[in-house]
Length: 311
View 1 (cartoon, rainbow, N blue to C red):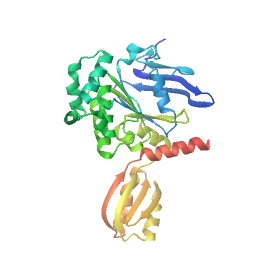
View 2 (view 1 turned 45 degrees about the vertical axis):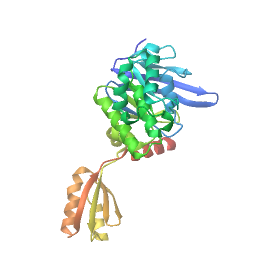
View 3 (view 1 turned 135 degrees about the horizontal axis):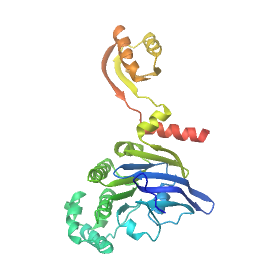
């Protein structure tokens, strides 16, 4: 049986994994499309890593199926996995080897040409440390070396499990830039995270899981629309009195008005924004700055999980 009717490169159908009394993944069905960055999101312990390990053939599913490019994935699907660059959640290398020696070793394991090693090291920004022992590396440098080993063989699919977890801002940006660059070169990227801002910054589509079950799948915009999370108008102004706030609240399409220091935050329909600004002008309110704040993944995430727990 093959499943690739919608051009999915990774697909799970009712994928389930039980560890004794713990149901880690519960009938999970997902599709990752060719050429997209797909974010796999959920709180710690949601089942993200277990799902990834089943797709990679590291865990046997209790039931259900996983497919890579339409073909069944499992422990014996070595040929399928050759086209996947895998960055596990906790990657480690031999401390006494240099990056060059480390990647040479992985090239030997995969039957790849070692001549690519210097360019791989350069691509992830580690050329300056090519001959240093990995044991002297920071966590961020180790993570970038992990990305380099995933790139061996020029795979068309990358699966990265918490690639920015525990990194400081400098290394988060470096890993994020590399993910974006790989995608721009045509690769499909799947990465798991519980860091909402990272997913929102990178992904074309996301799936949110909780306690092993799929909560929602789609774009951030789709999810926000479904939950009716609206953009907010942020206005830096002085001289806003209670009557002005009441006037803004009376505008059709305005849902909420809050005041924080000398800023107004107005949740409203797009059509109401100009009416809000008109009220401020009519009342001689000095507006110093304003901008639209788009719905965040944090809001969608919190509301989705709240809905799920309340259902």
